[in-house]
Length: 96
Image (cartoon, rainbow, N blue to C red):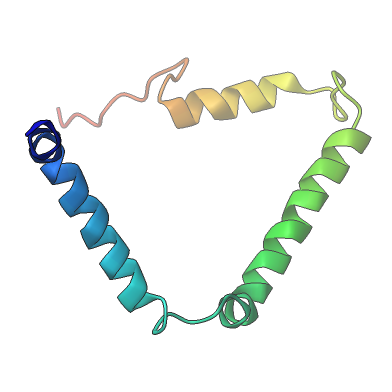
């Protein structure tokens, strides 16, 4: 009687495996083939690959550590403005 006790111990695992197997067997014939999915999504795959290539290309060819325009203050001011940390906060209009 040792084997049925072990099977009862793993009954949820067995039920899950059977359910997953049956679901897979019934879904695979109705699912589209890999070629159909590839034919549908090839423009997205191609544009993503070209974008990643451009990012890598420009990342490797740009000069590191130098600013082309030499004006870091403008960039810092813009970042502070976007972050909401203004040097001179704008006072609200008061009617006196």
